[in-house]
Image (tube, rainbow, N blue to C red; front, top):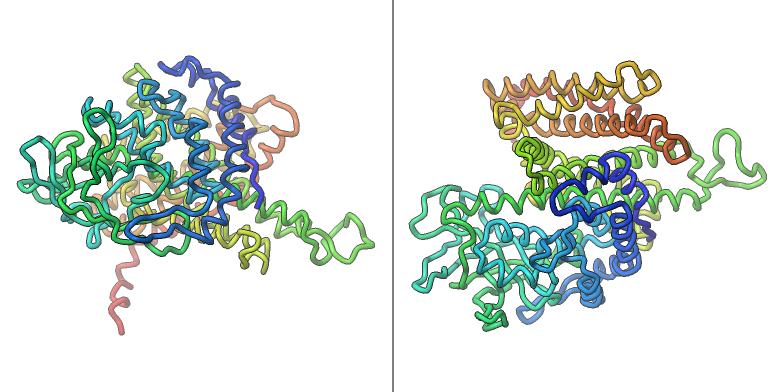
Length: 590
Protein backbone atom coordinates (compact mmCIF):
# COMPACT_ATOMS: atom_id res chain seq x y z
CA UNK A 1 0.00 0.00 0.00
CA UNK A 2 0.96 3.64 -0.37
CA UNK A 3 0.44 6.53 2.03
CA UNK A 4 1.38 10.18 1.89
CA UNK A 5 0.28 12.24 4.86
CA UNK A 6 -2.11 15.02 3.67
CA UNK A 7 0.04 17.73 5.24
CA UNK A 8 -0.99 20.40 2.72
CA UNK A 9 -4.66 19.97 3.55
CA UNK A 10 -3.93 19.87 7.27
CA UNK A 11 -1.90 23.08 7.08
CA UNK A 12 -4.66 24.74 5.08
CA UNK A 13 -7.12 24.02 7.89
CA UNK A 14 -4.69 25.23 10.55
CA UNK A 15 -3.52 28.37 8.78
CA UNK A 16 -6.26 29.50 6.39
CA UNK A 17 -9.30 28.44 8.41
CA UNK A 18 -8.63 28.17 12.16
CA UNK A 19 -5.68 30.56 12.08
CA UNK A 20 -2.35 29.65 13.65
CA UNK A 21 -2.35 33.10 15.25
CA UNK A 22 -5.43 32.06 17.25
CA UNK A 23 -3.62 28.94 18.44
CA UNK A 24 -0.49 30.91 19.36
CA UNK A 25 -2.62 33.39 21.32
CA UNK A 26 -3.45 30.70 23.88
CA UNK A 27 -1.25 30.75 27.02
CA UNK A 28 1.60 28.26 26.71
CA UNK A 29 1.42 28.12 22.91
CA UNK A 30 3.26 31.37 22.20
CA UNK A 31 6.07 29.38 20.58
CA UNK A 32 3.73 27.79 18.02
CA UNK A 33 4.02 29.17 14.49
CA UNK A 34 3.40 27.98 10.96
CA UNK A 35 6.91 26.60 10.46
CA UNK A 36 6.70 24.59 13.68
CA UNK A 37 3.35 23.06 12.77
CA UNK A 38 4.42 22.21 9.23
CA UNK A 39 7.72 20.70 10.37
CA UNK A 40 6.06 18.53 13.01
CA UNK A 41 3.40 17.29 10.58
CA UNK A 42 5.90 16.57 7.82
CA UNK A 43 8.18 14.61 10.15
CA UNK A 44 5.24 12.66 11.56
CA UNK A 45 4.12 11.85 8.03
CA UNK A 46 7.56 10.56 7.11
CA UNK A 47 7.72 8.37 10.21
CA UNK A 48 4.30 6.90 9.54
CA UNK A 49 4.90 6.13 5.86
CA UNK A 50 8.47 4.88 6.25
CA UNK A 51 8.43 3.08 9.61
CA UNK A 52 4.84 2.10 10.40
CA UNK A 53 3.11 1.43 7.08
CA UNK A 54 5.52 -1.40 6.14
CA UNK A 55 4.63 -3.12 9.46
CA UNK A 56 0.87 -2.90 8.98
CA UNK A 57 0.50 -6.14 7.04
CA UNK A 58 3.11 -7.84 9.22
CA UNK A 59 1.07 -7.01 12.31
CA UNK A 60 -2.07 -8.38 10.68
CA UNK A 61 -0.47 -11.66 9.56
CA UNK A 62 1.54 -12.42 12.72
CA UNK A 63 -0.70 -10.75 15.27
CA UNK A 64 0.07 -10.30 18.93
CA UNK A 65 1.03 -13.62 20.51
CA UNK A 66 0.12 -14.84 24.00
CA UNK A 67 2.57 -17.42 25.37
CA UNK A 68 3.51 -18.51 28.88
CA UNK A 69 1.35 -15.82 30.46
CA UNK A 70 2.86 -12.92 28.49
CA UNK A 71 2.12 -11.06 25.26
CA UNK A 72 4.63 -10.51 22.47
CA UNK A 73 4.01 -7.81 19.88
CA UNK A 74 4.38 -8.57 16.14
CA UNK A 75 7.84 -8.59 14.49
CA UNK A 76 9.25 -5.12 14.02
CA UNK A 77 6.93 -3.39 16.47
CA UNK A 78 9.51 -3.17 19.26
CA UNK A 79 12.09 -1.55 17.00
CA UNK A 80 9.53 0.87 15.57
CA UNK A 81 8.27 1.75 19.05
CA UNK A 82 11.84 2.51 20.19
CA UNK A 83 12.21 4.95 17.28
CA UNK A 84 8.77 6.38 18.08
CA UNK A 85 9.99 7.21 21.58
CA UNK A 86 13.44 8.43 20.46
CA UNK A 87 11.75 10.96 18.19
CA UNK A 88 9.62 12.27 21.06
CA UNK A 89 6.19 11.41 19.66
CA UNK A 90 4.67 10.09 22.96
CA UNK A 91 5.02 13.51 24.61
CA UNK A 92 4.00 15.84 21.82
CA UNK A 93 1.19 17.61 23.73
CA UNK A 94 2.38 16.71 27.23
CA UNK A 95 3.41 19.32 29.78
CA UNK A 96 7.12 20.31 29.60
CA UNK A 97 7.14 19.85 33.39
CA UNK A 98 6.88 16.10 32.71
CA UNK A 99 9.28 16.13 29.76
CA UNK A 100 6.72 16.85 27.06
CA UNK A 101 6.91 19.29 24.17
CA UNK A 102 3.86 21.33 25.16
CA UNK A 103 2.44 21.51 21.65
CA UNK A 104 -1.29 21.91 20.93
CA UNK A 105 -3.66 18.99 21.27
CA UNK A 106 -4.87 19.91 17.80
CA UNK A 107 -1.51 18.83 16.36
CA UNK A 108 -1.82 15.55 18.26
CA UNK A 109 -5.20 14.95 16.64
CA UNK A 110 -3.70 15.40 13.17
CA UNK A 111 -0.85 13.03 13.95
CA UNK A 112 -3.39 10.57 15.33
CA UNK A 113 -4.97 10.56 11.87
CA UNK A 114 -1.60 9.71 10.29
CA UNK A 115 -1.05 6.89 12.76
CA UNK A 116 -4.53 5.53 12.05
CA UNK A 117 -3.83 5.60 8.32
CA UNK A 118 -0.48 3.87 8.46
CA UNK A 119 -0.85 1.30 11.24
CA UNK A 120 -3.86 1.28 13.56
CA UNK A 121 -2.62 -1.68 15.59
CA UNK A 122 0.65 0.10 16.39
CA UNK A 123 -1.23 3.29 17.20
CA UNK A 124 -3.23 1.51 19.89
CA UNK A 125 -0.12 0.70 21.93
CA UNK A 126 0.50 4.43 22.39
CA UNK A 127 -3.03 5.82 22.23
CA UNK A 128 -4.27 4.73 25.66
CA UNK A 129 -1.07 6.05 27.24
CA UNK A 130 -1.91 9.47 25.86
CA UNK A 131 -5.36 9.44 27.42
CA UNK A 132 -4.11 8.00 30.70
CA UNK A 133 -1.46 10.71 30.92
CA UNK A 134 -3.97 13.53 30.58
CA UNK A 135 -6.33 11.94 33.11
CA UNK A 136 -3.57 11.50 35.68
CA UNK A 137 -2.14 14.96 35.01
CA UNK A 138 -5.50 16.50 35.94
CA UNK A 139 -6.81 14.11 38.60
CA UNK A 140 -3.93 12.31 40.34
CA UNK A 141 -2.03 13.41 43.43
CA UNK A 142 1.27 15.25 43.16
CA UNK A 143 3.14 12.14 44.30
CA UNK A 144 1.59 10.03 41.53
CA UNK A 145 2.22 12.72 38.90
CA UNK A 146 5.86 13.05 39.91
CA UNK A 147 6.47 9.33 40.11
CA UNK A 148 4.71 8.14 36.96
CA UNK A 149 4.11 10.85 34.39
CA UNK A 150 7.68 11.50 33.15
CA UNK A 151 8.08 7.85 32.18
CA UNK A 152 4.73 7.90 30.39
CA UNK A 153 5.77 10.98 28.44
CA UNK A 154 9.07 9.32 27.55
CA UNK A 155 7.17 6.25 26.35
CA UNK A 156 9.06 3.84 28.60
CA UNK A 157 5.85 3.18 30.56
CA UNK A 158 2.44 2.81 28.92
CA UNK A 159 -1.14 3.10 30.14
CA UNK A 160 -4.50 1.36 29.79
CA UNK A 161 -8.15 1.95 30.62
CA UNK A 162 -9.84 -0.95 32.46
CA UNK A 163 -13.62 -0.60 32.48
CA UNK A 164 -15.37 -3.54 30.82
CA UNK A 165 -16.11 -6.79 32.67
CA UNK A 166 -17.51 -10.08 31.32
CA UNK A 167 -21.06 -9.16 32.38
CA UNK A 168 -20.78 -5.37 32.23
CA UNK A 169 -19.99 -3.29 29.16
CA UNK A 170 -21.50 0.17 28.73
CA UNK A 171 -23.53 -0.16 31.94
CA UNK A 172 -20.65 0.47 34.34
CA UNK A 173 -23.01 0.58 37.29
CA UNK A 174 -23.01 -3.24 37.15
CA UNK A 175 -19.26 -3.69 37.54
CA UNK A 176 -18.07 -6.12 40.25
CA UNK A 177 -14.34 -5.43 40.63
CA UNK A 178 -13.74 -4.80 44.32
CA UNK A 179 -11.32 -2.49 46.11
CA UNK A 180 -10.45 -2.65 49.80
CA UNK A 181 -8.55 -0.09 51.85
CA UNK A 182 -5.15 -1.16 53.20
CA UNK A 183 -3.51 0.16 56.36
CA UNK A 184 -0.64 1.73 54.41
CA UNK A 185 -3.02 3.98 52.42
CA UNK A 186 -3.03 1.82 49.31
CA UNK A 187 -5.93 -0.29 48.05
CA UNK A 188 -6.28 -3.96 47.17
CA UNK A 189 -8.18 -4.76 43.96
CA UNK A 190 -9.79 -8.05 42.93
CA UNK A 191 -11.71 -8.73 39.73
CA UNK A 192 -11.54 -9.39 36.00
CA UNK A 193 -11.50 -6.88 33.15
CA UNK A 194 -11.95 -7.76 29.48
CA UNK A 195 -11.32 -6.05 26.12
CA UNK A 196 -8.33 -4.20 27.56
CA UNK A 197 -6.44 -2.61 24.68
CA UNK A 198 -2.66 -2.98 25.13
CA UNK A 199 -3.30 -4.65 28.48
CA UNK A 200 -0.06 -6.60 28.12
CA UNK A 201 2.85 -6.37 25.68
CA UNK A 202 6.63 -6.22 25.41
CA UNK A 203 7.08 -2.65 24.19
CA UNK A 204 7.46 -0.88 27.54
CA UNK A 205 9.10 -1.59 30.90
CA UNK A 206 5.89 -1.07 32.81
CA UNK A 207 2.16 -0.82 32.12
CA UNK A 208 -0.05 1.43 34.23
CA UNK A 209 -3.65 0.26 34.46
CA UNK A 210 -6.38 2.77 35.29
CA UNK A 211 -9.06 0.57 36.86
CA UNK A 212 -12.64 1.29 37.85
CA UNK A 213 -13.65 -0.61 40.98
CA UNK A 214 -16.10 -0.46 43.86
CA UNK A 215 -15.08 0.00 47.50
CA UNK A 216 -16.57 -2.37 50.06
CA UNK A 217 -18.82 0.32 51.53
CA UNK A 218 -19.60 2.14 48.29
CA UNK A 219 -23.17 2.94 47.25
CA UNK A 220 -24.71 0.96 44.40
CA UNK A 221 -24.63 2.11 40.80
CA UNK A 222 -22.29 4.56 39.12
CA UNK A 223 -22.17 6.78 42.21
CA UNK A 224 -20.16 4.10 43.98
CA UNK A 225 -17.31 3.74 41.49
CA UNK A 226 -13.74 4.76 42.27
CA UNK A 227 -10.68 5.00 40.04
CA UNK A 228 -7.34 3.38 40.83
CA UNK A 229 -3.87 3.28 39.33
CA UNK A 230 -2.66 -0.33 39.30
CA UNK A 231 0.89 -0.73 37.89
CA UNK A 232 1.86 -4.04 36.31
CA UNK A 233 5.15 -3.66 38.19
CA UNK A 234 5.24 -1.76 41.47
CA UNK A 235 7.44 1.32 41.67
CA UNK A 236 9.86 1.89 44.55
CA UNK A 237 10.16 5.18 46.42
CA UNK A 238 13.26 6.07 44.40
CA UNK A 239 11.39 5.57 41.12
CA UNK A 240 12.97 2.24 40.25
CA UNK A 241 10.91 -0.80 39.36
CA UNK A 242 10.14 -3.21 42.19
CA UNK A 243 8.27 -6.48 42.36
CA UNK A 244 5.58 -7.65 39.97
CA UNK A 245 2.06 -6.68 41.03
CA UNK A 246 -0.76 -9.23 41.23
CA UNK A 247 -2.03 -8.42 37.71
CA UNK A 248 -2.06 -11.34 35.29
CA UNK A 249 -3.03 -11.75 31.66
CA UNK A 250 -5.50 -14.61 31.28
CA UNK A 251 -5.75 -14.49 27.47
CA UNK A 252 -5.89 -12.26 24.42
CA UNK A 253 -8.85 -11.94 22.08
CA UNK A 254 -8.79 -13.42 18.55
CA UNK A 255 -10.29 -10.60 16.53
CA UNK A 256 -11.64 -9.75 13.11
CA UNK A 257 -9.08 -6.97 12.67
CA UNK A 258 -6.40 -4.90 14.45
CA UNK A 259 -4.69 -8.23 15.05
CA UNK A 260 -1.34 -6.65 15.80
CA UNK A 261 -2.89 -4.97 18.85
CA UNK A 262 -3.15 -7.05 22.03
CA UNK A 263 -6.70 -7.00 23.42
CA UNK A 264 -6.42 -8.69 26.81
CA UNK A 265 -8.36 -10.30 29.62
CA UNK A 266 -6.74 -9.17 32.89
CA UNK A 267 -7.14 -10.71 36.32
CA UNK A 268 -6.53 -8.55 39.39
CA UNK A 269 -5.87 -10.91 42.30
CA UNK A 270 -5.53 -8.64 45.34
CA UNK A 271 -3.38 -6.27 43.30
CA UNK A 272 -2.01 -3.11 44.89
CA UNK A 273 -3.63 0.09 43.64
CA UNK A 274 -3.53 3.81 44.33
CA UNK A 275 -6.60 6.03 44.43
CA UNK A 276 -6.87 8.61 41.64
CA UNK A 277 -9.16 11.48 42.59
CA UNK A 278 -11.75 11.07 45.32
CA UNK A 279 -13.44 7.88 46.49
CA UNK A 280 -16.73 7.14 44.71
CA UNK A 281 -15.97 9.82 42.11
CA UNK A 282 -14.03 7.62 39.71
CA UNK A 283 -16.43 7.62 36.80
CA UNK A 284 -16.38 11.39 36.51
CA UNK A 285 -12.59 11.30 36.43
CA UNK A 286 -12.55 8.47 33.90
CA UNK A 287 -14.83 10.40 31.58
CA UNK A 288 -11.95 12.80 30.95
CA UNK A 289 -10.08 9.93 29.36
CA UNK A 290 -13.12 8.30 27.77
CA UNK A 291 -14.16 11.46 25.92
CA UNK A 292 -10.62 12.02 24.66
CA UNK A 293 -10.49 8.42 23.47
CA UNK A 294 -13.86 8.71 21.74
CA UNK A 295 -12.53 11.53 19.61
CA UNK A 296 -9.35 9.52 19.01
CA UNK A 297 -11.39 6.53 17.82
CA UNK A 298 -13.28 8.73 15.38
CA UNK A 299 -9.96 9.98 14.07
CA UNK A 300 -8.87 6.37 13.59
CA UNK A 301 -11.78 6.03 11.18
CA UNK A 302 -10.73 9.21 9.41
CA UNK A 303 -7.23 7.79 9.01
CA UNK A 304 -8.57 4.61 7.43
CA UNK A 305 -10.79 6.61 5.07
CA UNK A 306 -7.80 8.70 3.94
CA UNK A 307 -5.50 5.78 3.13
CA UNK A 308 -8.35 3.86 1.51
CA UNK A 309 -9.01 6.85 -0.76
CA UNK A 310 -5.34 7.29 -1.66
CA UNK A 311 -4.91 3.67 -2.66
CA UNK A 312 -8.21 3.37 -4.53
CA UNK A 313 -7.34 6.51 -6.50
CA UNK A 314 -3.89 5.15 -7.39
CA UNK A 315 -5.35 1.80 -8.41
CA UNK A 316 -8.06 3.40 -10.53
CA UNK A 317 -5.44 5.38 -12.43
CA UNK A 318 -3.45 2.23 -13.23
CA UNK A 319 -6.11 -0.46 -13.73
CA UNK A 320 -7.30 -0.74 -17.35
CA UNK A 321 -10.70 -2.32 -17.89
CA UNK A 322 -13.30 -1.65 -20.60
CA UNK A 323 -13.57 1.42 -22.77
CA UNK A 324 -14.49 4.70 -21.16
CA UNK A 325 -17.60 6.53 -22.39
CA UNK A 326 -17.09 9.81 -24.20
CA UNK A 327 -13.72 11.04 -25.45
CA UNK A 328 -10.98 8.47 -24.83
CA UNK A 329 -7.30 9.28 -24.28
CA UNK A 330 -6.21 6.71 -26.88
CA UNK A 331 -8.95 5.19 -29.06
CA UNK A 332 -6.49 2.62 -30.41
CA UNK A 333 -6.26 0.83 -27.07
CA UNK A 334 -8.58 -2.01 -26.06
CA UNK A 335 -9.29 -0.60 -22.59
CA UNK A 336 -8.92 2.56 -20.53
CA UNK A 337 -8.00 3.23 -16.88
CA UNK A 338 -11.07 2.77 -14.71
CA UNK A 339 -10.60 6.28 -13.31
CA UNK A 340 -12.38 7.33 -16.53
CA UNK A 341 -15.51 5.37 -15.61
CA UNK A 342 -18.16 7.81 -14.29
CA UNK A 343 -19.24 5.64 -11.36
CA UNK A 344 -15.64 5.21 -10.19
CA UNK A 345 -15.21 8.98 -10.34
CA UNK A 346 -18.39 9.44 -8.31
CA UNK A 347 -17.26 6.98 -5.62
CA UNK A 348 -13.84 8.60 -5.25
CA UNK A 349 -15.17 12.15 -5.19
CA UNK A 350 -17.74 11.26 -2.51
CA UNK A 351 -15.04 9.71 -0.33
CA UNK A 352 -12.79 12.74 -0.74
CA UNK A 353 -15.57 15.24 -0.02
CA UNK A 354 -16.45 13.44 3.19
CA UNK A 355 -12.85 12.90 4.30
CA UNK A 356 -11.91 16.55 3.90
CA UNK A 357 -15.10 17.69 5.62
CA UNK A 358 -14.64 15.19 8.45
CA UNK A 359 -11.08 16.38 8.95
CA UNK A 360 -12.39 19.91 9.35
CA UNK A 361 -14.78 18.77 12.08
CA UNK A 362 -11.91 17.00 13.89
CA UNK A 363 -9.68 20.08 13.57
CA UNK A 364 -12.41 22.33 14.97
CA UNK A 365 -12.90 19.94 17.90
CA UNK A 366 -9.14 19.85 18.49
CA UNK A 367 -8.86 23.63 18.53
CA UNK A 368 -11.77 23.93 20.94
CA UNK A 369 -10.11 21.33 23.20
CA UNK A 370 -7.02 23.56 23.30
CA UNK A 371 -9.13 26.62 24.11
CA UNK A 372 -10.88 24.67 26.83
CA UNK A 373 -7.55 23.64 28.37
CA UNK A 374 -5.56 26.86 27.91
CA UNK A 375 -7.71 29.97 27.66
CA UNK A 376 -7.94 32.36 30.62
CA UNK A 377 -11.20 33.86 29.32
CA UNK A 378 -14.10 32.21 31.22
CA UNK A 379 -16.56 32.87 28.41
CA UNK A 380 -14.22 31.33 25.83
CA UNK A 381 -13.68 28.30 28.07
CA UNK A 382 -17.42 27.82 28.52
CA UNK A 383 -18.04 28.03 24.77
CA UNK A 384 -15.18 25.65 24.00
CA UNK A 385 -16.39 23.20 26.65
CA UNK A 386 -19.84 23.24 25.08
CA UNK A 387 -18.45 22.68 21.58
CA UNK A 388 -16.23 19.77 22.63
CA UNK A 389 -19.02 18.08 24.60
CA UNK A 390 -21.48 18.37 21.72
CA UNK A 391 -19.03 17.35 19.00
CA UNK A 392 -17.57 14.33 20.81
CA UNK A 393 -20.39 11.90 19.87
CA UNK A 394 -20.52 13.36 16.36
CA UNK A 395 -16.78 12.99 15.74
CA UNK A 396 -16.75 9.48 17.17
CA UNK A 397 -19.76 8.23 15.23
CA UNK A 398 -19.49 10.01 11.89
CA UNK A 399 -15.75 9.58 11.41
CA UNK A 400 -15.75 5.93 12.47
CA UNK A 401 -18.70 5.16 10.17
CA UNK A 402 -16.84 7.00 7.43
CA UNK A 403 -13.81 4.77 7.91
CA UNK A 404 -15.94 1.66 7.33
CA UNK A 405 -17.92 3.03 4.39
CA UNK A 406 -14.85 4.48 2.69
CA UNK A 407 -12.88 1.26 3.08
CA UNK A 408 -15.78 -0.67 1.56
CA UNK A 409 -16.18 1.76 -1.33
CA UNK A 410 -12.44 1.76 -1.97
CA UNK A 411 -12.44 -2.04 -1.89
CA UNK A 412 -15.22 -1.96 -4.48
CA UNK A 413 -13.03 0.15 -6.77
CA UNK A 414 -10.51 -2.70 -6.73
CA UNK A 415 -13.13 -5.27 -7.71
CA UNK A 416 -11.95 -8.82 -7.05
CA UNK A 417 -8.45 -7.61 -6.25
CA UNK A 418 -9.86 -5.77 -3.26
CA UNK A 419 -11.06 -9.02 -1.74
CA UNK A 420 -7.65 -10.70 -1.61
CA UNK A 421 -4.90 -9.88 0.82
CA UNK A 422 -2.29 -8.73 -1.69
CA UNK A 423 -3.50 -5.16 -2.06
CA UNK A 424 -4.31 -4.55 1.62
CA UNK A 425 -7.86 -3.31 1.16
CA UNK A 426 -9.46 -6.27 2.92
CA UNK A 427 -7.34 -5.54 5.99
CA UNK A 428 -8.53 -1.93 6.02
CA UNK A 429 -12.13 -3.15 5.95
CA UNK A 430 -11.51 -5.50 8.88
CA UNK A 431 -9.48 -2.99 10.89
CA UNK A 432 -11.98 -0.18 10.40
CA UNK A 433 -14.92 -2.27 11.58
CA UNK A 434 -13.97 -2.00 15.25
CA UNK A 435 -14.16 1.80 15.33
CA UNK A 436 -17.98 2.11 15.39
CA UNK A 437 -18.00 -0.50 18.19
CA UNK A 438 -15.41 0.22 20.83
CA UNK A 439 -15.17 3.17 23.21
CA UNK A 440 -18.96 3.15 23.36
CA UNK A 441 -20.81 1.95 20.27
CA UNK A 442 -22.11 4.60 17.91
CA UNK A 443 -25.59 3.81 19.17
CA UNK A 444 -24.41 4.69 22.67
CA UNK A 445 -23.04 7.96 21.27
CA UNK A 446 -26.48 8.69 19.80
CA UNK A 447 -28.15 8.17 23.18
CA UNK A 448 -25.55 10.46 24.78
CA UNK A 449 -26.22 13.11 22.14
CA UNK A 450 -30.00 12.99 22.49
CA UNK A 451 -30.46 12.37 26.22
CA UNK A 452 -27.63 14.51 27.56
CA UNK A 453 -26.17 16.93 25.05
CA UNK A 454 -29.43 18.29 23.60
CA UNK A 455 -30.84 19.10 27.01
CA UNK A 456 -27.67 20.01 28.96
CA UNK A 457 -27.79 23.57 30.35
CA UNK A 458 -31.32 23.92 28.96
CA UNK A 459 -30.16 23.30 25.40
CA UNK A 460 -27.29 25.80 25.50
CA UNK A 461 -24.78 23.53 23.74
CA UNK A 462 -26.74 22.97 20.58
CA UNK A 463 -28.11 26.50 20.42
CA UNK A 464 -24.58 27.91 20.68
CA UNK A 465 -23.49 25.87 17.65
CA UNK A 466 -26.62 26.79 15.70
CA UNK A 467 -26.03 30.47 16.45
CA UNK A 468 -22.46 30.26 15.13
CA UNK A 469 -23.73 29.02 11.79
CA UNK A 470 -26.70 31.39 11.65
CA UNK A 471 -24.27 34.28 11.94
CA UNK A 472 -22.17 32.77 9.15
CA UNK A 473 -25.12 32.45 6.78
CA UNK A 474 -26.43 35.92 7.65
CA UNK A 475 -23.01 37.39 6.88
CA UNK A 476 -22.85 35.60 3.53
CA UNK A 477 -26.44 36.30 2.47
CA UNK A 478 -25.42 38.70 -0.31
CA UNK A 479 -22.47 36.66 -1.62
CA UNK A 480 -24.16 35.04 -4.60
CA UNK A 481 -20.98 33.36 -5.85
CA UNK A 482 -20.91 31.26 -2.68
CA UNK A 483 -24.56 30.26 -2.88
CA UNK A 484 -23.66 26.80 -4.26
CA UNK A 485 -22.48 25.94 -0.75
CA UNK A 486 -24.33 28.40 1.45
CA UNK A 487 -27.85 27.63 0.21
CA UNK A 488 -27.84 23.84 0.76
CA UNK A 489 -25.94 24.14 4.05
CA UNK A 490 -28.38 26.81 5.30
CA UNK A 491 -31.35 24.67 4.30
CA UNK A 492 -29.85 21.66 6.09
CA UNK A 493 -29.30 23.74 9.24
CA UNK A 494 -32.92 24.86 9.24
CA UNK A 495 -33.97 21.23 8.84
CA UNK A 496 -31.73 20.21 11.75
CA UNK A 497 -33.02 23.00 14.00
CA UNK A 498 -36.62 22.01 13.33
CA UNK A 499 -35.90 18.33 13.89
CA UNK A 500 -33.97 19.08 17.08
CA UNK A 501 -37.06 20.72 18.52
CA UNK A 502 -39.08 17.64 17.56
CA UNK A 503 -36.52 15.36 19.26
CA UNK A 504 -36.51 17.38 22.47
CA UNK A 505 -40.33 17.24 22.59
CA UNK A 506 -40.33 13.48 22.00
CA UNK A 507 -37.66 13.01 24.65
CA UNK A 508 -39.95 14.65 27.19
CA UNK A 509 -43.18 12.95 26.08
CA UNK A 510 -42.08 9.63 24.55
CA UNK A 511 -38.49 8.75 25.38
CA UNK A 512 -38.63 5.39 23.62
CA UNK A 513 -39.43 7.05 20.29
CA UNK A 514 -36.68 9.63 20.75
CA UNK A 515 -34.11 6.93 21.48
CA UNK A 516 -35.28 4.80 18.55
CA UNK A 517 -34.66 7.81 16.30
CA UNK A 518 -31.36 8.78 17.94
CA UNK A 519 -28.96 7.06 15.53
CA UNK A 520 -30.59 8.54 12.41
CA UNK A 521 -30.77 11.94 14.10
CA UNK A 522 -27.09 11.74 15.06
CA UNK A 523 -26.07 11.04 11.45
CA UNK A 524 -28.26 13.86 10.17
CA UNK A 525 -26.66 16.19 12.74
CA UNK A 526 -23.14 15.12 11.71
CA UNK A 527 -23.78 15.52 7.98
CA UNK A 528 -25.27 18.96 8.58
CA UNK A 529 -22.33 19.93 10.76
CA UNK A 530 -19.85 18.91 8.07
CA UNK A 531 -21.82 20.91 5.50
CA UNK A 532 -21.66 23.97 7.75
CA UNK A 533 -17.92 23.52 8.30
CA UNK A 534 -17.52 23.32 4.52
CA UNK A 535 -19.47 26.59 4.32
CA UNK A 536 -17.07 28.19 6.82
CA UNK A 537 -14.10 26.97 4.81
CA UNK A 538 -15.44 28.25 1.50
CA UNK A 539 -16.17 31.63 3.12
CA UNK A 540 -12.60 31.75 4.45
CA UNK A 541 -11.28 31.15 0.91
CA UNK A 542 -13.25 34.02 -0.62
CA UNK A 543 -11.05 35.84 -3.12
CA UNK A 544 -8.31 33.22 -3.02
CA UNK A 545 -7.24 32.04 -6.47
CA UNK A 546 -5.28 29.06 -7.69
CA UNK A 547 -5.76 25.37 -8.41
CA UNK A 548 -5.71 24.36 -4.73
CA UNK A 549 -8.52 26.70 -3.72
CA UNK A 550 -10.57 25.95 -6.82
CA UNK A 551 -10.32 22.22 -6.04
CA UNK A 552 -11.51 22.92 -2.49
CA UNK A 553 -14.57 24.75 -3.79
CA UNK A 554 -15.40 21.93 -6.19
CA UNK A 555 -15.05 19.29 -3.47
CA UNK A 556 -17.30 21.36 -1.20
CA UNK A 557 -19.85 21.38 -4.01
CA UNK A 558 -19.62 17.60 -4.34
CA UNK A 559 -20.47 17.25 -0.65
CA UNK A 560 -23.52 19.47 -1.05
CA UNK A 561 -24.69 17.65 -4.19
CA UNK A 562 -23.88 14.02 -3.45
CA UNK A 563 -23.73 13.61 0.34
CA UNK A 564 -25.89 16.23 2.05
CA UNK A 565 -29.17 15.16 0.33
CA UNK A 566 -29.12 12.09 2.59
CA UNK A 567 -30.33 14.38 5.38
CA UNK A 568 -33.70 14.80 3.63
CA UNK A 569 -34.40 11.06 3.85
CA UNK A 570 -32.99 10.87 7.38
CA UNK A 571 -35.39 13.59 8.53
CA UNK A 572 -38.32 11.56 7.20
CA UNK A 573 -37.00 8.41 8.90
CA UNK A 574 -36.63 10.21 12.21
CA UNK A 575 -40.18 11.53 12.15
CA UNK A 576 -41.52 8.12 11.14
CA UNK A 577 -39.92 6.45 14.14
CA UNK A 578 -43.02 6.95 16.28
CA UNK A 579 -44.75 4.41 14.03
CA UNK A 580 -42.30 1.65 14.95
CA UNK A 581 -44.12 0.71 18.14
CA UNK A 582 -46.93 -0.87 16.10
CA UNK A 583 -44.45 -3.29 14.54
CA UNK A 584 -42.46 -4.19 17.66
CA UNK A 585 -44.71 -7.22 18.48
CA UNK A 586 -43.48 -8.80 15.24
CA UNK A 587 -40.15 -9.38 16.97
CA UNK A 588 -41.85 -11.85 19.31
CA UNK A 589 -43.16 -14.00 16.49
CA UNK A 590 -41.55 -17.41 15.99
